[in-house]
Amino acid sequence: MRSTLTAIRNRMDRAGILLSGLCAVHCVLGIVLVGFLGLGGDIIGGQVLLSPEIHRVGLMLAVVVGVISLGFGVARHGRVAPLVIGGLGLTLMAAAILVGHGTAESVLTIIGVSLVAFAHIRNMRHTH
Image (cartoon, rainbow, N blue to C red; front, side):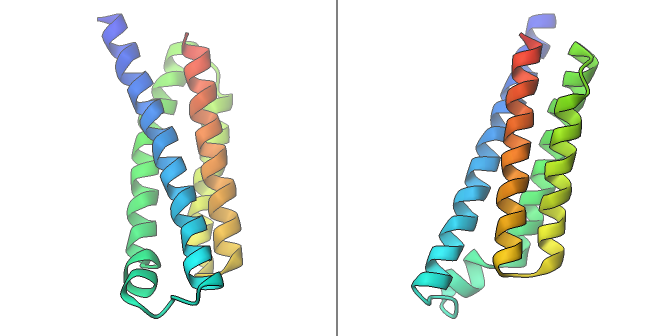
């Protein structure tokens, strides 16, 4: 039973790392398509890639995965640092939604997802 729970927690941490990476790629791709290629008004750039819904859904997924895996990690290994680091990252991601599209949003998001991924990595290391 214990090894099953550890495997589930590890999968959740890996999912958190994957989601963080996808979010960072999405952010950088948005900067390239809109900022450098000027494709902000087309369907891909304007209506899909920059849709606020994508950011909200991504943040909700990050919060759910983070709370489950990082929270259970604290219960398992007793170290609060991954939860605090992940919480800071999620806060920055939420702030990015509030500032609107632009450089500030991209910077906040990339720093936020980097912190969340780092927190998941630390959580996995403490669990083993």
